[in-house]
Length: 321
Image 1 (cartoon, rainbow, N blue to C red):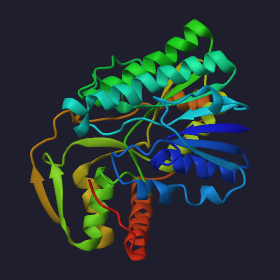
Image 2 (image 1 turned 60 degrees about the horizontal axis):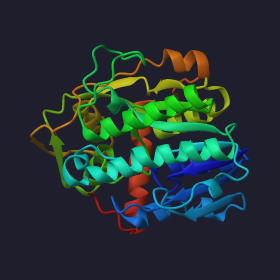
Image 3 (image 1 turned 90 degrees about the vertical axis):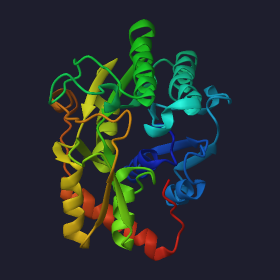
C-alpha cells in the first residue's frame, strides 16, 4: 500500500508512519513544522523513519503549496496534520486553526477529487466536537456542541470530509480521537507535563480540581484504528476511537505517583473551553472496523514515563510549552 501521511512529524503522525513502515507499506510523509512547539522534537520523531528506504519525507505547507503532486501513486491518505491545542485556539491565533484545520482539509479533498477519487482518506477528528456531551458514553449520533474554537474547526473539517463523500463519492472516514497519550505526546499536553515534572521533581500544575474525567486512548490503539479504517471504514462514516478507560486527572496522577514517588501538585483555575467529562461509545468501531483497544491506562502511562526518562537521560532539549 502506498500511503500519504500528513503531519508525519507530529505525535500521532510519526507513530503511524513507523507502524506503516514496519508493516511493509511505502510512506510519503509531509509536514510544515508549525512553530506551535519545537521543531527539534518533531525532527526526533521521524528520525527512525528517515532511515527506511520506503519512506519519503517532504517539508511542505499544505495551505500554500500544491497538494496534487503529493497524491501521485497514493492509495490511502492519513490526514493527521492540523493545528492542535484548546488553549491557543482563543483570540488572534484562531486564524491558524482556520487555515490548518479547515482550509487545508478542503484543499486536500479538492485535490483528491481532481487527481483520483478512489484514494481513501482517513481523517483525524476529535472528541472535542462533542464539548459537554449530552450523554455518556457518547455515541456518534450525539449532537456535536464544541466548547472551544479548536473543537469548532475540527467539526467543520469533519463535516467537509463527510460532505465530499456524499456529494462527490469520495472514500472518506473520520475518526474522533479521545484524549490520546503515549510516547512522543506533544509537550503542551497534560501527560507529558506530568511525566517530565514528576521525574525531575518539579511542581505539577493542575487546571481545575482534577476530577475532570477523560476516555484516555494510547497512541498505538489510535494507530491501529487508522489502519483498520483504511481497510474497512464505510464511505463517509464517523467513528469514535476511545481507550475504554474512563479516569479522572487525579486518578492519573495517582498512577504516576505509584511509579515515580511523591508528587508536588498545585491546583489552579479551570481552563476555559475544557469539557468536564468525555466517554466514548466505540460499539460502531468495534462492529464495523473490528477495533478494540489493547493498552490499559496503567500500561500506557508506564510506557510514557519510560519514554520521558529516556528523553531526559539523553540530554535532548524537551521544552514544555
